[in-house]
Image (cartoon, rainbow, N blue to C red):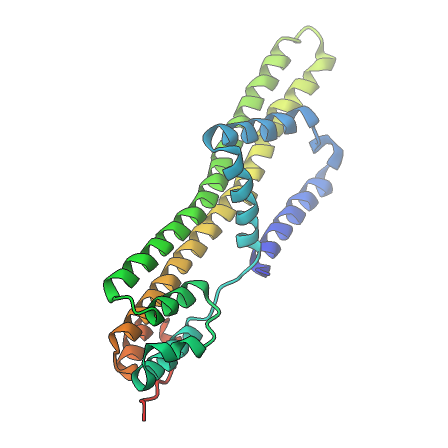
Length: 256
């Protein structure tokens, strides 16, 4: 669980709610027509931009990615790569079959090694896997960014609707409040949906995708280093360039 995302969302909602409730009755900020204009219009716009299946998959995957931190430790990956390199240098590619590799991409790279494929083929297959994976994740970011772009726009549309309703009933002052409520609250709803939910999640997804790309690039370097039969200590030094300065503490062991 990513507690930063959860804490930010909950604290934002609570602070806004408290600020509203402390200054007035909370019920006056609840307006069903205005809420329907913003949410209905936003959903409709997103469905026009993306196919229904992609919208559902991207929204579900995006929520999971934003609220669940599944990041892996690159230090452990480098340590495993050094171990596999030592085994290959001692016993050959077939000995790698006995090593348990949890990461799917790394496991596929090891399987390609044990099958005897050359460096060019392995690099091509893994790069294609990385590209396809990142593209699938980027769609989720685009869906949330589309929500963030559309919600304020439909908030403004709701404002125009409310103003038109208000102006059309100038002869009945008692009806002006309904139009004014729609006019102002739709802008509020759109701003909250965009700036507290959709755009922050889109930015979080972008950050996760960038980190995932770097991690998978590290996996590619690990597999290619093993395939080339590089000295484990030298390979470790190269792989450590992917780590933050404080994390460069993996120690390689030369084969006996």
